[in-house]
Length: 169
Image 1 (cartoon, helix red, strand yellow):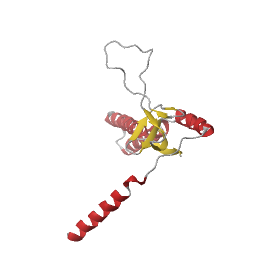
Image 2 (cartoon, one colour; image 1 turned 60 degrees about the vertical axis):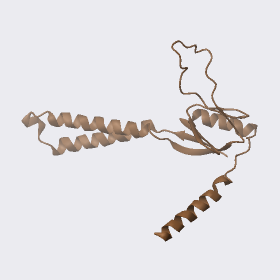
Image 3 (cartoon, rainbow, N blue to C red; image 1 turned 60 degrees about the horizontal axis):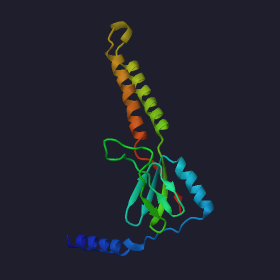
Image 4 (tube, rainbow, N blue to C red; image 1 turned 120 degrees about the vertical axis):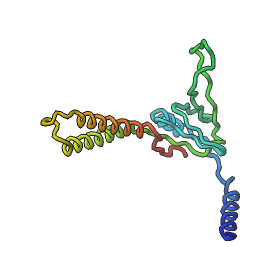
Protein backbone atom coordinates (compact mmCIF):
# COMPACT_ATOMS: atom_id res chain seq x y z
CA UNK A 1 0.00 0.00 0.00
CA UNK A 2 2.81 2.42 0.85
CA UNK A 3 4.61 1.53 -2.35
CA UNK A 4 1.57 2.47 -4.40
CA UNK A 5 1.18 5.72 -2.49
CA UNK A 6 4.83 6.61 -3.10
CA UNK A 7 4.50 5.71 -6.78
CA UNK A 8 1.39 7.84 -7.08
CA UNK A 9 3.09 10.73 -5.28
CA UNK A 10 6.06 10.45 -7.66
CA UNK A 11 3.77 10.49 -10.69
CA UNK A 12 1.98 13.56 -9.37
CA UNK A 13 5.31 15.32 -8.77
CA UNK A 14 6.50 14.57 -12.30
CA UNK A 15 3.16 15.78 -13.70
CA UNK A 16 3.33 19.02 -11.73
CA UNK A 17 6.96 19.58 -12.71
CA UNK A 18 6.23 19.27 -16.44
CA UNK A 19 2.76 20.88 -16.46
CA UNK A 20 3.97 24.34 -17.39
CA UNK A 21 6.43 23.30 -20.11
CA UNK A 22 4.00 23.71 -23.02
CA UNK A 23 4.66 26.87 -24.93
CA UNK A 24 2.60 28.90 -27.34
CA UNK A 25 3.36 28.91 -31.05
CA UNK A 26 4.57 32.00 -32.88
CA UNK A 27 2.20 33.78 -35.24
CA UNK A 28 2.27 32.33 -38.75
CA UNK A 29 3.69 34.25 -41.69
CA UNK A 30 1.43 35.46 -44.52
CA UNK A 31 1.79 32.31 -46.64
CA UNK A 32 1.12 29.95 -43.74
CA UNK A 33 -1.79 32.15 -42.61
CA UNK A 34 -3.46 31.85 -46.03
CA UNK A 35 -3.01 28.06 -46.02
CA UNK A 36 -4.40 27.88 -42.49
CA UNK A 37 -7.47 29.89 -43.54
CA UNK A 38 -8.19 27.49 -46.39
CA UNK A 39 -7.67 24.40 -44.23
CA UNK A 40 -9.85 25.67 -41.38
CA UNK A 41 -12.55 26.77 -43.82
CA UNK A 42 -12.77 23.31 -45.36
CA UNK A 43 -12.77 21.40 -42.05
CA UNK A 44 -15.91 20.15 -40.31
CA UNK A 45 -14.58 21.42 -36.98
CA UNK A 46 -11.46 23.15 -35.71
CA UNK A 47 -9.88 22.55 -32.31
CA UNK A 48 -7.64 25.23 -30.85
CA UNK A 49 -5.50 24.17 -27.89
CA UNK A 50 -4.35 26.96 -25.61
CA UNK A 51 -2.21 26.86 -22.50
CA UNK A 52 -5.29 26.58 -20.30
CA UNK A 53 -8.09 25.04 -22.35
CA UNK A 54 -9.26 23.44 -25.58
CA UNK A 55 -11.82 25.15 -27.83
CA UNK A 56 -13.81 23.52 -30.63
CA UNK A 57 -15.50 25.68 -33.25
CA UNK A 58 -17.31 24.92 -36.49
CA UNK A 59 -16.21 27.90 -38.54
CA UNK A 60 -13.49 29.97 -36.87
CA UNK A 61 -11.90 32.96 -38.56
CA UNK A 62 -8.11 32.87 -38.82
CA UNK A 63 -6.70 36.35 -38.46
CA UNK A 64 -3.22 37.83 -38.21
CA UNK A 65 -3.76 38.44 -34.49
CA UNK A 66 -5.12 34.98 -33.71
CA UNK A 67 -8.10 32.68 -34.21
CA UNK A 68 -11.59 34.09 -33.69
CA UNK A 69 -14.05 31.42 -32.63
CA UNK A 70 -17.47 31.43 -34.24
CA UNK A 71 -20.51 31.84 -32.07
CA UNK A 72 -22.87 28.88 -32.01
CA UNK A 73 -25.87 30.35 -30.24
CA UNK A 74 -28.12 33.23 -31.07
CA UNK A 75 -28.83 36.33 -29.05
CA UNK A 76 -30.80 35.80 -25.84
CA UNK A 77 -33.76 37.93 -26.88
CA UNK A 78 -37.31 37.57 -28.10
CA UNK A 79 -36.76 39.76 -31.17
CA UNK A 80 -33.32 39.71 -32.77
CA UNK A 81 -31.51 41.66 -35.46
CA UNK A 82 -29.46 39.34 -37.66
CA UNK A 83 -27.66 42.17 -39.46
CA UNK A 84 -25.02 42.45 -36.71
CA UNK A 85 -23.63 39.03 -35.73
CA UNK A 86 -22.17 38.44 -32.30
CA UNK A 87 -18.40 38.79 -32.21
CA UNK A 88 -16.59 35.57 -31.41
CA UNK A 89 -13.88 35.09 -28.83
CA UNK A 90 -10.38 35.93 -30.06
CA UNK A 91 -7.59 33.54 -29.10
CA UNK A 92 -4.28 35.31 -29.68
CA UNK A 93 -1.30 33.51 -31.17
CA UNK A 94 0.76 33.92 -28.01
CA UNK A 95 -1.85 31.80 -26.14
CA UNK A 96 -2.30 29.12 -28.82
CA UNK A 97 -0.31 25.89 -28.54
CA UNK A 98 -1.72 24.11 -31.60
CA UNK A 99 -4.55 24.10 -34.12
CA UNK A 100 -6.20 20.88 -35.31
CA UNK A 101 -8.65 20.43 -38.17
CA UNK A 102 -11.31 17.80 -37.73
CA UNK A 103 -13.28 15.93 -40.32
CA UNK A 104 -16.44 13.94 -39.79
CA UNK A 105 -16.99 11.06 -42.17
CA UNK A 106 -20.79 11.04 -42.10
CA UNK A 107 -21.44 9.65 -45.59
CA UNK A 108 -18.83 6.93 -45.38
CA UNK A 109 -19.90 5.76 -41.93
CA UNK A 110 -23.59 5.90 -42.85
CA UNK A 111 -22.88 3.73 -45.90
CA UNK A 112 -20.99 1.29 -43.68
CA UNK A 113 -24.07 1.20 -41.42
CA UNK A 114 -26.33 0.62 -44.43
CA UNK A 115 -24.06 -2.22 -45.55
CA UNK A 116 -24.16 -3.80 -42.10
CA UNK A 117 -27.95 -3.39 -42.04
CA UNK A 118 -28.33 -4.99 -45.48
CA UNK A 119 -26.09 -7.86 -44.41
CA UNK A 120 -28.08 -8.38 -41.21
CA UNK A 121 -31.39 -8.18 -43.09
CA UNK A 122 -30.15 -10.64 -45.72
CA UNK A 123 -29.04 -13.09 -43.03
CA UNK A 124 -32.41 -12.79 -41.31
CA UNK A 125 -34.31 -13.35 -44.53
CA UNK A 126 -32.05 -16.19 -45.66
CA UNK A 127 -31.96 -18.10 -42.38
CA UNK A 128 -35.42 -17.16 -41.13
CA UNK A 129 -38.67 -18.90 -41.88
CA UNK A 130 -39.81 -19.20 -45.44
CA UNK A 131 -41.83 -16.01 -45.86
CA UNK A 132 -43.49 -16.89 -49.17
CA UNK A 133 -44.93 -20.20 -48.00
CA UNK A 134 -46.08 -19.28 -44.51
CA UNK A 135 -47.17 -15.72 -45.21
CA UNK A 136 -45.37 -14.47 -42.07
CA UNK A 137 -44.44 -10.83 -42.58
CA UNK A 138 -42.77 -10.49 -39.19
CA UNK A 139 -39.42 -11.46 -40.72
CA UNK A 140 -39.79 -8.72 -43.31
CA UNK A 141 -40.53 -6.23 -40.55
CA UNK A 142 -37.52 -7.44 -38.54
CA UNK A 143 -35.28 -7.22 -41.61
CA UNK A 144 -36.46 -3.67 -42.27
CA UNK A 145 -35.82 -2.77 -38.65
CA UNK A 146 -32.29 -4.26 -38.89
CA UNK A 147 -31.58 -2.20 -42.00
CA UNK A 148 -32.87 0.98 -40.32
CA UNK A 149 -30.92 0.28 -37.13
CA UNK A 150 -27.68 -0.27 -39.06
CA UNK A 151 -28.20 2.97 -40.96
CA UNK A 152 -28.97 4.91 -37.76
CA UNK A 153 -25.94 3.54 -35.92
CA UNK A 154 -23.66 4.38 -38.87
CA UNK A 155 -25.07 7.89 -39.10
CA UNK A 156 -24.75 8.53 -35.36
CA UNK A 157 -21.20 7.19 -35.38
CA UNK A 158 -20.37 9.46 -38.34
CA UNK A 159 -21.73 12.60 -36.70
CA UNK A 160 -19.86 11.92 -33.48
CA UNK A 161 -16.31 12.91 -32.76
CA UNK A 162 -14.27 14.06 -35.74
CA UNK A 163 -10.91 12.66 -36.75
CA UNK A 164 -8.35 15.33 -35.81
CA UNK A 165 -5.30 16.30 -37.87
CA UNK A 166 -2.75 18.86 -36.73
CA UNK A 167 -2.56 21.83 -39.08
CA UNK A 168 -0.48 24.27 -37.03
CA UNK A 169 2.36 24.45 -35.97
